[in-house]
Image 1 (cartoon, rainbow, N blue to C red):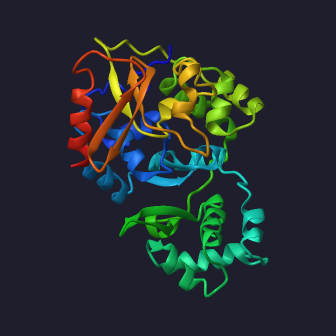
Image 2 (tube, rainbow, N blue to C red):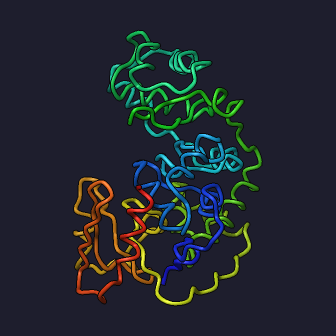
Length: 315
């Protein structure tokens, strides 16, 4: 059974937003509200403002990470995480599809971002002077991010922002050149947060080739299994939570007859009700109002504390 304790879902006291990200190594952050709620599921005291402060304070950084998708990463881990997980996410092909061509694309986006602070897509489009529009702008930023030159800033007016790494972090993100050290750190940290797991799980989570994942596994000692939490652990986990995305297969935590309810297709992954590490239903929210839909009747009051805490967190 997957360890809810390794994933901090037993909500140990005292962990700040940076501590949570550092422990999990990288936290899925494609959808910002879901990412915020992943912090709530792992801390009894963190507020949304605490997470935003850690982001504004540069303790955690939103950038392209494992599998080429957006994650929060602790600033101290950026060089080696970036070195291992940066990948050709098809930027050149996608840019061509968007009509963004030329042999100067990296200098172009570098100049457009440099010294400007966080820019919305519309603001960045103006600085690109017609060279890119729509998703072509985002793919240009992704190209810069591959070279350590860009990250995402906090949203402004509900819209994502993009910022030069030197403006936000003081310098471009350096790449860790000791690949063996980086692989060993990756395996050690992954295994601490994903117990039990195998190299195939690490490969699926990180996006690394299986051979690299196996090499990393050999380089890192196996960490001790986390101590079991007392009593049942009931959580309302958000869509795209690391507990669902951190392993190759979801079969151990999701009964096959309910798989389509949780993953209906089209890239949708619904928020789930977790009871002792097993998915027992789904839930939804409108603002801070929560509607739970368990697969089967649950004990009266089982979800009351969690529903109340989601309301607390979202304010």
